Image 1 (cartoon, rainbow, N blue to C red):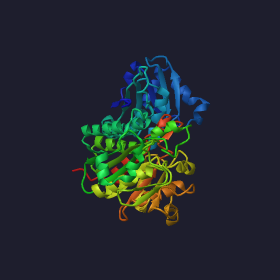
Image 2: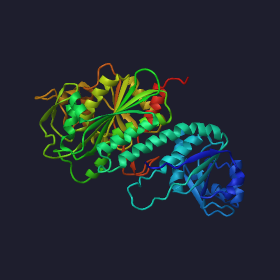
Image 3: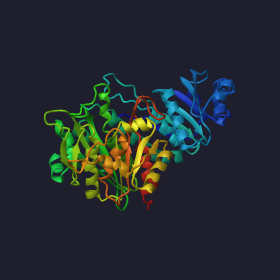
Image 4: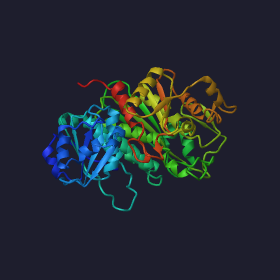
Length: 490
């Protein structure tokens, strides 16, 4: 797994600034007020910090912007980074400021003078997340990330808060690594093995192999993997940290998607290594919950398959029978994710008896057309549950937008030969996909479908991530569990 930048907290030690190696960072509000620690640093740099703040260009700076003084006189540090940040920033502002510092600092060790600035643990979390670099498949030796020492007034309180922020960051990075891996490495078997390793953190893990899936009647999921030499699997991860019925998280884990017989165009097909993004997010959330010992019962289920064209592959026009018993006419083998989810969602309800369920999938290109790369599509049969998630996503700065469900869209899925067909035409593609999934949700179960096709991976950097896998959803779902599903501590 990619290593996060290590960060720790300590009391403010102004005498140590002159001898600090690597880079030193200070936080100054937009109005340019110098705190006692910054004034000491200004004296060390022969007034260079004050000159930056007094320059006319400072008025144009925004929260999170960084001004760098290279090789400052009077200090051992290679640079001083001046970060624009209010003394009482929001959680999101603190994270973004930390992320911008990480981008400026590169791999250098850091000493950050936070003093009385609020949310130092969140600042450090942003610093760690933006320092991510998926380099494990490169042959050259990778330079390790230098550690960050954050000096702040309430350092013990910051360290306590960091127990959770580190856990969330570890979950995000676990998801990013899974999404970034090539399909020849992250096979269905390797994916399952990495999830079995979560047992070391106290997660109960069960792997269902193809013989068991056949016994359970998962004809929809098994049909997707028929053309691949890789075995199809379902992995169930149970975190039993609370009381009562669990929240079920279900992820689409198509480790590579050629489209099957309905073959995708060659340009861009290499990106289909990320078609297991939903399963990646579920895995990251489960790791986070285990690391922070969440007082909640949560079960994560992922369907792991590979969609390949071959002489044994599923054909357009085939009719398969789902675990629920509904028959499905497969008109397009590239609409495979909903087939995987249908069986795993049904199994989740039968075997785990959840109080609520959320599925995640890089399901449709249509949601990217509708919402771009800034928001995931949200669909739900329960207004209160949907609002809880949207509130959590907003609090964590992860874009999400609710789209409708209605009978008129469901009617587009009627089949002349089977109970349902797996596509409803070009119009409202992300909605008809959600309508398909809703048929596999029991009427009385609160359910959310998250179409993350546009947010799981980005061709440009985001606030907290470099270009590539984002880990979107781990923070929002952890917040949802924290706010809605956790029991009080003893």
